[in-house]
Amino acid sequence: MRAVLQRVTEAACRVDGNITGEIGNGFLALLGIEDADTTDDLQWLAQKIVNMRVFGDENGLMNKALSDIDGNILLISQFTLFAQTKKGNRPSFIRAARPDKAIPLYEQMIVTLETLTGKKIATGIFGADMKVSLVNDGPVTIIIDSKNKE
Image (cartoon, rainbow, N blue to C red):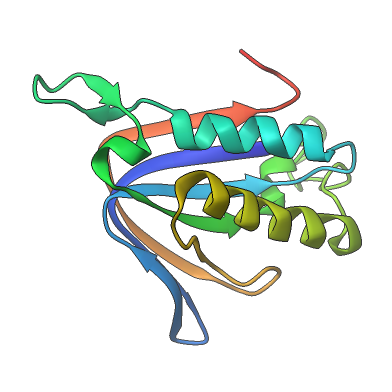
């Protein structure tokens, strides 16, 4: 399971012109799910997301977590995070989980993040053609991979 976290001052997702989710300060979290992912990957990644200390403190240092700033999460499913680009110029997405596996894990991630944060998680619509807008704060962008715990 892979997440790209972008620290934002605002973010929104639109599908067919309608807002499906929007937040102020917090994380825009792009989530990729692969076939090998389990609930263990999900739990580990969810903990990382909510506890990542990349928000500025009173000295301008990245010492605060999401809860310290009363931040929110906009969670967007994005299978393209598992693009393989080694051969040719057309990416392969063979590692990305099919919807029958990915949707339950995506929905479980929403519930897990809501439990950990005590807040409603804003979302896109799984599999839809989404238009995501954001104001990246910093910019700060962090990539987390449950199979490559650096």
